[in-house]
Image 1 (spheres, one colour):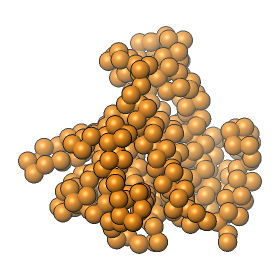
Image 2 (image 1 turned 180 degrees about the vertical axis):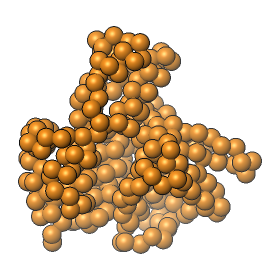
Image 3 (image 1 turned 90 degrees about the vertical axis):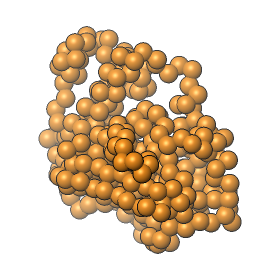
Length: 290
């Protein structure tokens, strides 16, 4: 299981603070691989608000005391309000990847309303996007590094996330074909689960009964990127995390994210990020150093 999280002032205690419009208290991610089950149960809830983003796999939520299991698949976000009972769990067999953020402020309820999130909404269908994961990962890093003005940067990142959610909710060009939606969501799920293996786009399209040209065209319309670009982006994003948080060498990291050839991995990484993996690791460590 992969865990990465960070807390304001390094405190695990939840809090309510109305001194400012918006305050991010904590942020993190869980990705289950081998752990059988990861449950969360807070019968009295928390003092702050929470948004959870299911990036891959699925999560099980229980929104009332009747024990009804609401399965929330990838491409959805879940909202909890202060003092609202929380009960949810993830299973390793689902390969669940979830990002979460806790926040508070003097007028958060109206802020959420302004971004199209009503008071009685728990589940928001946002679709999957690398932009969501980028924002969550950046919030985690801001809380971990605690550089100058980081609380303000955190609120800006959270507002950016809310803006993306609002755009998705109000989008006029969103694909409405149910079959097409399900096929593209299935593809995204498959790519997230298997990004570090050798994925053949033509073979995948054929396995779903689609021509490769039709699949690529509709995937690009749905995700704003081609299938292979999407896979590469996942690989590089995960390589970034490993470069920043582990001591694995570049060859090992390349293997972990799906590249057997370390030279090719370095070339792809540099093309995406402008620097080599080694240079990226050096830069990230220099930023961490006061």
